[in-house]
Image (cartoon, rainbow, N blue to C red; front, side, top):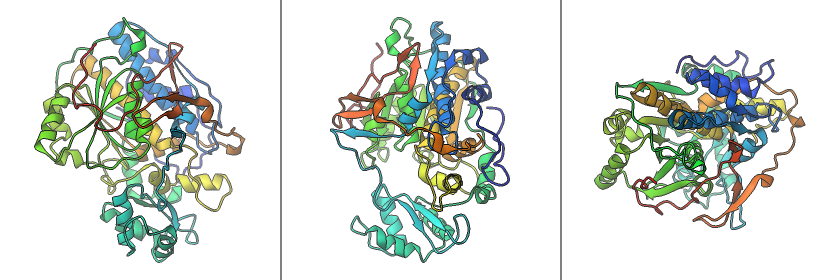
Length: 493
């Protein structure tokens, strides 16, 4: 992918420019991926901003990212089957999807551990020295217990938030962030955009493309998977095999986006790995299997699956899969012509290149929380109203995967695709700011809900935001718990 991202503005994220149109943002993504420009004429969507109560153009960003993924899927169908299909994505629909709200048997799952969230420290962050903050992610028990141990508190669910608040008041925010990172924990000190712009990791992220798409090797072009021209209901990606090794949240969104277009997505979980309740919502359209990659048998099964797939999608921390024998070079030896897609929190280069992180922490570290608070005249940090970094990255991962598939079938080679949450944050911050974010209507998620059976219970969740050829895409398979399916590919129809 040619070109790199421009630096953040020198004073932070504040920009006098109004957000561009969704058509402009989509066209920039499309041109950077070097895809057929005529396809852009097949996309439609509304341009209303503010579409959500944010000073950032999250509606435009999400609409363009998902639109790019959907349009790339129809390019697969056009080049394979000769059918050019129109695509529509509306802001209200994609914002509802990115809210990640759902119920199971009428119950709204608890999405956050009681110890997750913002804490004041003694100094070292915030708008200035008077308001330091640190954000802790404790949704997994081992992350929670690691933070408690670092603070000298009893580990386990019985330690309550006031004890953590008192302990953190004795820390400088960035000192605690550093100590936590050294132990592999997920913590971020809040920074103003100008503070982040001066950080060496911001420079590293700025030097990377938003969606990196890079050729590797000289493998001949592969044939297209079996097409869907005879069955329009099957979706434009029918026959495309996607092996997914992801858990939270952008990676699962990417796999689910490809599944909505008809791809055969096989989700692999480890029997020892924790998951979050959102798995019930993000597993729609997928088959779900268990493999223990710590064992020779699990590794052998994964190798066989890789040999028969088109796309390998993973969100492990950089280097983790390579340590198990599944780095990009090894994957391409198993499956020449593979499109290997990976997600990271802060990119793969720079001093934070291998650091763990999630949407909420990257918002904090890169300045979004404090910039958003300033826009609303608040003195405490303010998060984005939807999971914009997770969903934006998920849609861009799906887009990059399909751009890689298109390039492979046209030019041969294996292809490597990379997206980072921090890169999406930079992209969003460069998109301009909205003068009056309070003018946006309240987000009406429930009006976009569908009801469907699942292996987790009766699932009420937002329908997919993409319409292709006037038809709203739906997931063909219900979400099911890990281990429901065997770790094998489905027989082609």
